[in-house]
Image 1 (cartoon, rainbow, N blue to C red):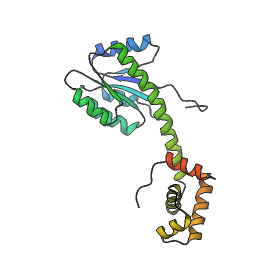
Image 2: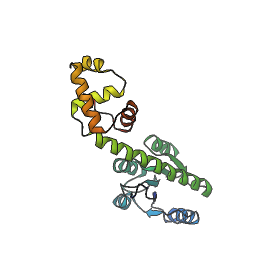
Image 3: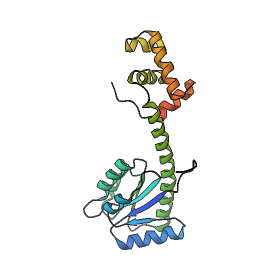
Image 4: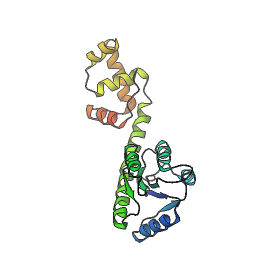
Length: 210
């Protein structure tokens, strides 16, 4: 990502069937969409970028590492990736399981070209949106990481609407001490209004329970 603009979505197909790779490649080529093809999860994971939007067409029935296993590995590496599961006849329940584990949809083989193309385009849009959210979360987390543990406690309680006296009672501190922590936190984070605090808290990863 350079100059504030997102790089194009990196679209990949992972399928051990050459006929499927050829068919989807032709479909994407006709639509002007660049597609990267891989015959197994291992080669795909070796090429998977982590710093740009990613959308993946993932076959369920593959040797060594099947689709559900590959999906879990992708989500660890690139939680912002948009994943579509391809499934053969008889494995639809497993494809539905994949949706519960992070895929945005599934398509049953043999697929209809226009239906698949529509879902690919949906995945490209989703990949961009999820990557933007990922960047916002990463940036917010980096800012929140500058706080001390006490400043983060105070910030989180301010973000849910608690007044300084309530926070003081909850944390066993003097109200003035809470206000000092609040001021330091806002200075470090570069926020000046309650709206800024709420937006940053929304974007950041929730702190672990004390």
